[in-house]
Image (cartoon, rainbow, N blue to C red; front, side):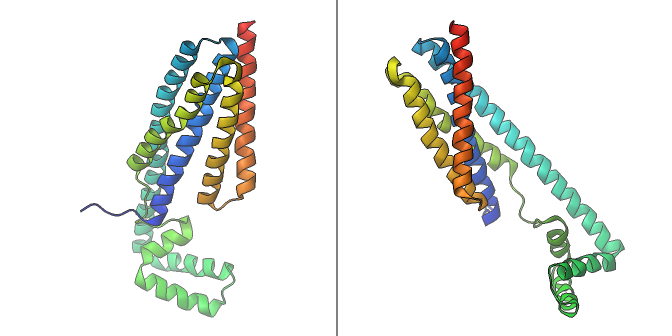
Length: 226
């Protein structure tokens, strides 16, 4: 039977999807806008965009897999060390949890009672949560994160690639910039919503970074054209 993902795991997969789409939009937009600055040949622009999309898809998927795997390895080592510490020095681990509760403003007597109850119910989960900030049974699956990026990156790439090749030459660059800015605003908002961050700030940051990327690559492309 397939194990259901926890809410935290689902959010991490969604994060990988949003960031994959965002990188796909931004990376391929930078490539096609830069090539458009150097040439008006739609075939050359299209091939460059496809090459960037394929390279970026593999790079993002592998990068996500390595990143999440490294995080998972570190979490597994933390669990292993905590298990050893609980066996060899239970009292020090219990004292750490109690002190952590006190630092949050809980009265010492109540902190002692809460520590006893939590350590009796599930000492490993309690110590891991308080010391490292994660749950032992809530690992992010590196394969799920990699697949999410593998799918979302090319989906994001399609927008700038389609805009630059389908619109007439006289408006293709402007149309692509507008389309990309709208898409980056959406991914910026989505990423902020998942991370419970400031939506407006995330949108502005994402759009400005995308705009600067396209301006720089277009300027470099025009230099080669000249």
